[in-house]
Length: 420
Ligand SMILES: Cc1cc2nc3c(=O)[nH]c(=O)nc-3n(C[C@H](O)[C@H](O)[C@H](O)COP(=O)(O)OP(=O)(O)OC[C@H]3O[C@@H](n4cnc5c(N)ncnc54)[C@H](O)[C@@H]3O)c2cc1C
Image (cartoon, rainbow, N blue to C red):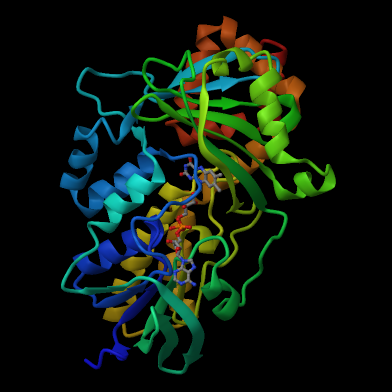
């Protein structure tokens, strides 16, 4: 193969968690591919650093030993056993991820700085089926009847890649999406988030519960405090970009003001130190309504490039990895049927994605819409604070989709309000 003219089956643009997951599964299926990454590892990504059970599931499917490695390194990966919700009035409820935990149960999620996590994943990408090119600047992307052509530059070396199909895994400002995708984009389904690292925050949960604080000033978004290894914590705020624009919110000033003055959290930051800079990034949320396309002719969008971040929790790592895994599965089917047409991909990728995650994303969008009614939030959390039965119901909602669906229905709040 000419080093400046690569020919392969699949090209993946972007080596974040989504692109890496896709690569690992393509390797599993023996499919040759090239991965183009614009940065050089180890590289950071602004994030809350919380990895859900979905992330763990994809890693386990890729290789169970990798998950064991993660769970055995508690100085790098911190197991988390639940979520603390704090209502706008300051009342907290602690919801364990498992309502019925056995002694040998593994923590369903973990937290880890993305600098460490993405580098861990990247270290697993090497295989005889995968060629990775870092520091790669994509100059031109074109589609022709029999494939995709990329012209790129890596540290001054110009080269081309020819492939049968492309996976766009290049994040929230995806060039692949902009250039090759002709589906709709919902500009309103976009949030912006800030991330800061702190040391010395007090009263973190002994089982590393992640904390979501629905402060009145940031609704319909929230402030989070996610414990990390070595006494650190990831602190941030996320809110719809639309709201930031309309209310002319200075998110950074608001976050720092909350940390300093909000009576529910300020005491815990008394001896805390901000480590490094506060940084911002966008979150392309899955739109609440409909199931917009994720693909096209010879094209698969995954992760942030596909706009599949959970609209309520902001979870994007698990969704990126899951969509990467499903894209690889679909590519296997495309290859077996020699069919990379938009119709075939829609049936084998989009439809499967929405069958598995469509309901979850729709419920989250409904929950995100209802969270702006802060009096309702206060009321439900007040009730749960006093009622173990209601608390247990909410706990089960994290693992049971039908119960979680209840949380997005007006009738659920009616029953809580009127004690039915
Ligand atoms: C403030 C904030 C907090 C968040 N908190 C959480 C959280 O706690 N838990 C969670 O699950 N999710 C969270 N998310 C969402 C999560 O960070 C993303 O959904 C996730 O990183 C998506 O993974 P990805 O692989 O699709 O994209 P990315 O992680 O963005 O990776 C894309 C990769 O593509 C590369 N790239 C970009 N353009 C090009 C190009 N032209 N050519 C080649 N390479 C390119 C980039 O360098 C990068 O390596 C948060 C997001 C934000 C902004």
